[in-house]
Image (cartoon, rainbow, N blue to C red; front, side):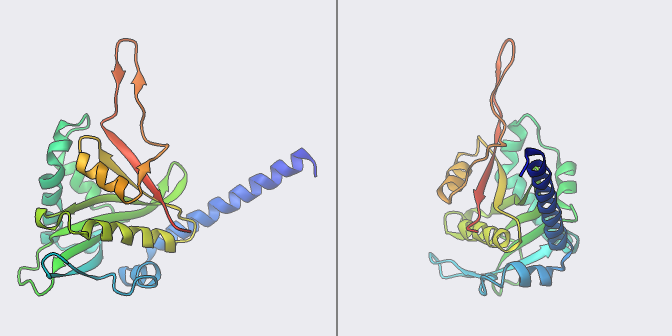
Length: 230
Protein backbone atom coordinates (compact mmCIF):
# COMPACT_ATOMS: atom_id res chain seq x y z
CA UNK A 1 0.00 0.00 0.00
CA UNK A 2 1.37 3.39 -0.99
CA UNK A 3 2.01 6.11 1.58
CA UNK A 4 -0.61 8.32 -0.10
CA UNK A 5 -3.23 5.59 0.07
CA UNK A 6 -2.48 4.93 3.74
CA UNK A 7 -2.86 8.65 4.44
CA UNK A 8 -6.24 8.72 2.67
CA UNK A 9 -7.49 5.70 4.62
CA UNK A 10 -6.23 7.19 7.86
CA UNK A 11 -8.14 10.40 7.14
CA UNK A 12 -11.30 8.43 6.32
CA UNK A 13 -11.00 6.47 9.56
CA UNK A 14 -10.47 9.66 11.56
CA UNK A 15 -13.50 11.26 9.92
CA UNK A 16 -15.63 8.18 10.64
CA UNK A 17 -14.57 8.26 14.30
CA UNK A 18 -15.39 11.95 14.54
CA UNK A 19 -18.86 11.40 13.07
CA UNK A 20 -19.50 8.51 15.47
CA UNK A 21 -18.35 10.59 18.44
CA UNK A 22 -20.58 13.50 17.46
CA UNK A 23 -23.55 11.16 17.02
CA UNK A 24 -23.00 9.57 20.45
CA UNK A 25 -22.80 12.96 22.18
CA UNK A 26 -25.80 14.33 20.28
CA UNK A 27 -27.88 11.26 21.15
CA UNK A 28 -26.99 11.54 24.84
CA UNK A 29 -27.86 15.24 24.93
CA UNK A 30 -31.27 14.84 23.28
CA UNK A 31 -32.46 12.04 25.59
CA UNK A 32 -35.13 12.74 28.18
CA UNK A 33 -34.01 12.40 31.78
CA UNK A 34 -35.81 9.06 32.09
CA UNK A 35 -34.12 7.69 28.96
CA UNK A 36 -30.76 9.12 30.02
CA UNK A 37 -31.00 7.27 33.34
CA UNK A 38 -32.18 4.07 31.67
CA UNK A 39 -29.42 4.09 29.05
CA UNK A 40 -26.45 5.31 31.05
CA UNK A 41 -27.08 4.84 34.78
CA UNK A 42 -29.54 2.16 35.84
CA UNK A 43 -28.24 -0.22 33.16
CA UNK A 44 -25.10 -0.60 35.31
CA UNK A 45 -26.22 0.57 38.75
CA UNK A 46 -29.76 -0.36 39.73
CA UNK A 47 -29.51 1.32 43.15
CA UNK A 48 -27.88 4.52 41.87
CA UNK A 49 -30.73 6.67 43.19
CA UNK A 50 -30.28 5.79 46.89
CA UNK A 51 -27.44 6.17 49.36
CA UNK A 52 -27.08 5.51 53.07
CA UNK A 53 -24.73 7.39 55.36
CA UNK A 54 -22.83 4.66 57.19
CA UNK A 55 -21.86 7.13 59.91
CA UNK A 56 -25.40 8.18 60.86
CA UNK A 57 -27.69 5.64 59.21
CA UNK A 58 -29.56 8.44 57.42
CA UNK A 59 -30.89 7.60 53.96
CA UNK A 60 -30.75 9.87 50.93
CA UNK A 61 -32.39 10.01 47.53
CA UNK A 62 -30.52 10.93 44.34
CA UNK A 63 -32.39 12.30 41.34
CA UNK A 64 -31.23 13.29 37.86
CA UNK A 65 -32.80 16.46 36.45
CA UNK A 66 -32.08 18.52 33.34
CA UNK A 67 -31.27 22.17 33.92
CA UNK A 68 -34.51 23.23 32.23
CA UNK A 69 -36.58 21.11 34.61
CA UNK A 70 -34.81 22.20 37.79
CA UNK A 71 -37.20 23.80 40.26
CA UNK A 72 -36.35 27.41 41.04
CA UNK A 73 -35.87 26.65 44.74
CA UNK A 74 -33.49 23.80 43.92
CA UNK A 75 -31.62 25.97 41.42
CA UNK A 76 -31.13 28.68 44.03
CA UNK A 77 -29.91 26.15 46.61
CA UNK A 78 -27.43 24.75 44.08
CA UNK A 79 -26.16 28.26 43.38
CA UNK A 80 -25.91 29.05 47.10
CA UNK A 81 -23.88 25.86 47.61
CA UNK A 82 -21.33 27.06 45.05
CA UNK A 83 -20.97 30.35 46.90
CA UNK A 84 -20.80 28.55 50.26
CA UNK A 85 -18.15 26.03 49.27
CA UNK A 86 -16.19 27.79 46.51
CA UNK A 87 -17.10 31.47 46.65
CA UNK A 88 -13.85 32.45 48.35
CA UNK A 89 -11.77 30.63 45.72
CA UNK A 90 -13.70 32.33 42.92
CA UNK A 91 -13.29 35.77 44.45
CA UNK A 92 -9.55 35.28 44.86
CA UNK A 93 -9.07 33.89 41.34
CA UNK A 94 -8.00 35.82 38.26
CA UNK A 95 -11.44 35.32 36.70
CA UNK A 96 -13.26 36.55 39.81
CA UNK A 97 -16.80 35.86 41.02
CA UNK A 98 -19.63 36.86 38.68
CA UNK A 99 -22.96 35.53 39.98
CA UNK A 100 -25.02 36.23 36.86
CA UNK A 101 -22.43 34.60 34.60
CA UNK A 102 -22.38 31.53 36.85
CA UNK A 103 -26.18 31.34 36.87
CA UNK A 104 -26.25 31.52 33.08
CA UNK A 105 -23.75 28.67 32.91
CA UNK A 106 -25.84 26.65 35.37
CA UNK A 107 -28.84 26.97 33.05
CA UNK A 108 -26.98 25.59 30.01
CA UNK A 109 -29.58 23.37 28.28
CA UNK A 110 -27.19 20.41 27.90
CA UNK A 111 -26.40 20.37 31.63
CA UNK A 112 -27.92 17.74 33.95
CA UNK A 113 -27.94 17.69 37.72
CA UNK A 114 -27.81 14.81 40.17
CA UNK A 115 -29.47 16.17 43.30
CA UNK A 116 -29.12 14.74 46.80
CA UNK A 117 -31.99 15.04 49.28
CA UNK A 118 -32.63 13.30 52.58
CA UNK A 119 -35.29 10.61 52.39
CA UNK A 120 -38.66 11.63 53.87
CA UNK A 121 -37.42 15.16 54.57
CA UNK A 122 -40.52 17.42 54.58
CA UNK A 123 -38.40 20.42 53.50
CA UNK A 124 -37.28 18.58 50.34
CA UNK A 125 -34.05 20.57 50.45
CA UNK A 126 -31.06 19.93 48.20
CA UNK A 127 -28.12 18.90 50.41
CA UNK A 128 -25.64 18.32 47.64
CA UNK A 129 -25.37 17.88 43.90
CA UNK A 130 -23.16 17.37 40.91
CA UNK A 131 -23.77 18.73 37.42
CA UNK A 132 -22.51 17.12 34.25
CA UNK A 133 -22.51 17.47 30.50
CA UNK A 134 -21.59 15.11 27.65
CA UNK A 135 -19.43 17.36 25.48
CA UNK A 136 -16.13 17.75 23.63
CA UNK A 137 -12.96 18.96 25.29
CA UNK A 138 -10.00 19.63 23.00
CA UNK A 139 -11.76 17.58 20.34
CA UNK A 140 -12.31 14.52 22.55
CA UNK A 141 -15.72 13.31 23.80
CA UNK A 142 -15.94 13.49 27.59
CA UNK A 143 -18.29 13.82 30.53
CA UNK A 144 -17.47 17.18 32.06
CA UNK A 145 -18.23 17.60 35.74
CA UNK A 146 -19.19 21.25 36.06
CA UNK A 147 -19.87 21.23 39.80
CA UNK A 148 -19.88 18.97 42.82
CA UNK A 149 -20.86 20.46 46.18
CA UNK A 150 -22.04 19.02 49.49
CA UNK A 151 -23.27 20.48 52.73
CA UNK A 152 -20.56 20.32 55.37
CA UNK A 153 -22.32 17.50 57.27
CA UNK A 154 -22.06 15.24 54.19
CA UNK A 155 -18.41 15.84 53.39
CA UNK A 156 -16.06 13.00 54.22
CA UNK A 157 -18.90 10.47 54.28
CA UNK A 158 -18.21 8.74 50.96
CA UNK A 159 -21.06 10.52 49.17
CA UNK A 160 -18.72 12.62 47.04
CA UNK A 161 -16.91 9.48 45.87
CA UNK A 162 -20.26 7.85 45.10
CA UNK A 163 -21.37 10.81 42.99
CA UNK A 164 -18.13 10.81 41.01
CA UNK A 165 -18.54 7.08 40.44
CA UNK A 166 -21.95 7.81 38.92
CA UNK A 167 -20.33 10.22 36.47
CA UNK A 168 -17.83 7.51 35.54
CA UNK A 169 -20.71 5.07 35.04
CA UNK A 170 -22.40 7.52 32.66
CA UNK A 171 -19.13 8.06 30.78
CA UNK A 172 -18.55 4.32 30.51
CA UNK A 173 -22.02 3.74 29.03
CA UNK A 174 -21.97 6.51 26.42
CA UNK A 175 -20.18 5.09 23.36
CA UNK A 176 -16.84 6.73 22.46
CA UNK A 177 -16.45 8.61 25.79
CA UNK A 178 -13.22 7.68 27.54
CA UNK A 179 -12.78 10.35 30.22
CA UNK A 180 -14.47 12.30 32.99
CA UNK A 181 -13.03 15.80 33.31
CA UNK A 182 -13.36 18.69 35.74
CA UNK A 183 -11.79 21.97 36.81
CA UNK A 184 -10.48 22.59 40.33
CA UNK A 185 -8.96 25.70 41.88
CA UNK A 186 -5.41 25.01 43.06
CA UNK A 187 -6.30 26.86 46.27
CA UNK A 188 -8.85 24.11 46.97
CA UNK A 189 -6.32 21.75 48.50
CA UNK A 190 -8.98 19.46 49.96
CA UNK A 191 -10.61 19.15 46.55
CA UNK A 192 -7.32 18.43 44.78
CA UNK A 193 -6.50 15.77 47.36
CA UNK A 194 -9.96 14.20 47.01
CA UNK A 195 -9.80 14.03 43.22
CA UNK A 196 -6.32 12.51 43.25
CA UNK A 197 -7.42 9.96 45.83
CA UNK A 198 -10.21 8.71 43.56
CA UNK A 199 -7.96 8.44 40.52
CA UNK A 200 -8.01 11.83 38.83
CA UNK A 201 -4.81 13.31 37.45
CA UNK A 202 -3.91 16.71 36.07
CA UNK A 203 -4.87 16.50 32.40
CA UNK A 204 -2.41 17.27 29.64
CA UNK A 205 -4.73 20.10 28.57
CA UNK A 206 -4.39 21.82 31.96
CA UNK A 207 -2.78 25.28 31.76
CA UNK A 208 0.94 25.46 32.49
CA UNK A 209 3.16 28.14 33.95
CA UNK A 210 4.02 30.83 31.40
CA UNK A 211 7.26 32.75 31.32
CA UNK A 212 6.88 36.40 30.44
CA UNK A 213 9.68 38.91 30.10
CA UNK A 214 9.54 40.08 33.70
CA UNK A 215 7.62 37.40 35.57
CA UNK A 216 6.22 33.88 35.64
CA UNK A 217 2.44 33.58 35.36
CA UNK A 218 1.08 30.60 37.28
CA UNK A 219 -2.44 29.25 36.65
CA UNK A 220 -4.83 29.28 39.60
CA UNK A 221 -6.74 26.20 38.49
CA UNK A 222 -6.12 22.73 37.12
CA UNK A 223 -8.03 20.65 34.61
CA UNK A 224 -8.19 17.08 35.86
CA UNK A 225 -9.33 13.86 34.23
CA UNK A 226 -9.89 10.19 34.91
CA UNK A 227 -10.21 7.58 32.21
CA UNK A 228 -13.17 5.22 32.15
CA UNK A 229 -12.75 1.50 32.60
CA UNK A 230 -13.58 0.79 28.95
